[in-house]
Length: 65
Image (cartoon, rainbow, N blue to C red; front, side, top):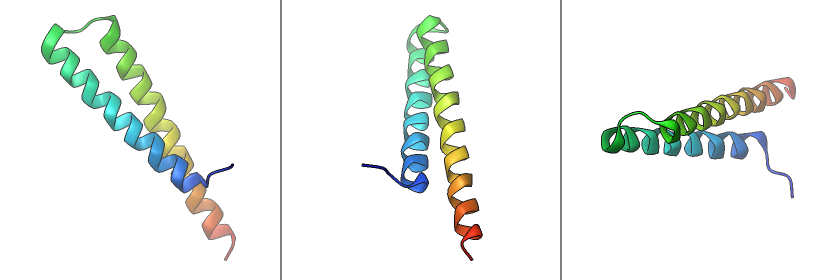
């Protein structure tokens, strides 16, 4: 089943914010390490993908008018 770009974009942004939260918690507990950089990388990819999908949704919506 295929989701709309809006739903996928929101999901990816929520996931990215969650990874940012985990990275902050990890830095507070253990300082910077491999796991922290991995979480930052995942958050960056998820937020970037989420924003791209949200822009795609609005571009498609404006193209239908």
